[in-house]
Amino acid sequence: MEESMSSADQNSSNTPRRALAMTSMSDEDYCNTYWPQLREAVDRLLQGPPSPPHTGPVIQFEPMYSAAYKCVCQQYSEVLYNDLTSHINKHFLKVAEDMQDVGDLHLIDSYYSLIHRVMYSLDGIIPIFTYLNRVYVETKLSSTLRTELQKIFCTAVIDPVIARLLALIKHITEAKPFYVAPHVLASLVKNLYKLRPAYAQTYPQVFSVYIPGVLPAMCEHELSDYIVETQKLQATLRQSWINTSSQGRKRCLDEEMLT
View: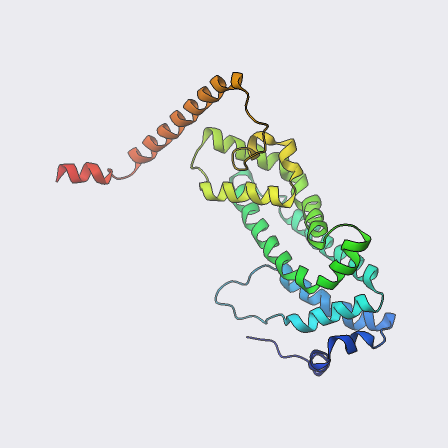
């Protein structure tokens, strides 16, 4: 259900963006009107995708984009960027605090879900601040808004747990195949690499399983070790499959042969 716009929002959305940007903005206007509107939209997006069926209010993109556009045009780029990154950093610090008590049993699934939620949020936040990104972040900071927000997320949430998380992934991959769904592990590692590629340089053995080109090209003298490693992995996977099959029903082929 869409949330109805206030008369001010309706007027601003019907005003050409260039004319809207030319109207003057005071510090009071920014602090009491424009930034609170943008902050509310950011807060909603940081909640992640709504649970189905979607019954909550919908964020109206055009008024939010226009508000950010005007802030940039009225020389509030740096203030807006600092407010935005500071607010998002506070949110991620709270998320990190809430994740501290997650045990190893649920660690992978929890961070798999969290990263998906954060990427959804950033995909909604960044378009609102497209003009800020183009005029201030790319020009003045020689970066992108996505890069900076991902950096904030990694520093606040992922960095404190990355060693523990990847050690657990490595242990499960080597000792307990299929303990966690393979697509969950693959998605988690690939998203970690997308968020901060430098993680792969610190933990190449984990990332090389899912990301091609992380390790240097193999030399000829390493082939024998690679063959032994592959045989061990195949034996582990085969044993895991046998154990799983023996605990469940007979294979369909066995039942067909008996009938």
